Length: 144
Image 1: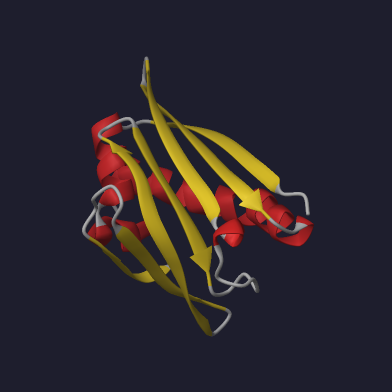
Image 2: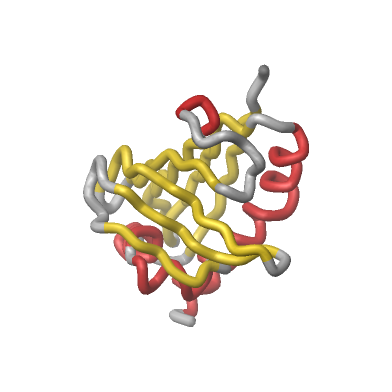
C-alpha cells in the first residue's frame, strides 16, 4: 500500500521560542487547535495524547515524542482512533515541525508522513492543516 506525505510552509511574525512553546505546551495547544485536552510530560520517548471531538465523535491521537530540539524542531508519531485503521506501527503517522529564523519572524515547516489513504491525505492537505496552522499563526501573533 502506498502512503502520502504533506508539506506546508507558513511565515509567522513571532520568534521560534514563542512558536515552539505554543506547539509543546499542553495549556497553549488547546487555545488554537480544536482539542479539549493535551496530556504529556514533554520528554523524548514520552507519550503525548491529543483529545478532541470531530462532528460529535470523540477521538484521541496517541503519540510518541521522537524529537524535541528547543526551539528548532518537534517531531512525533501517532495513531488516531478516528482514522479507521488498526493500532499497529505501520499505521502511525509522523508529524514534524521545523522552525527557521527569517528576517521578520519565523518560517514554520510542517511535514506529515505515512498517510495511508488518498481520502485522508486530501482532507488533511486541502482543509485541515491550512485551518490548524492559521489558528496557530493567529494565536502566536496576537496572543489570543
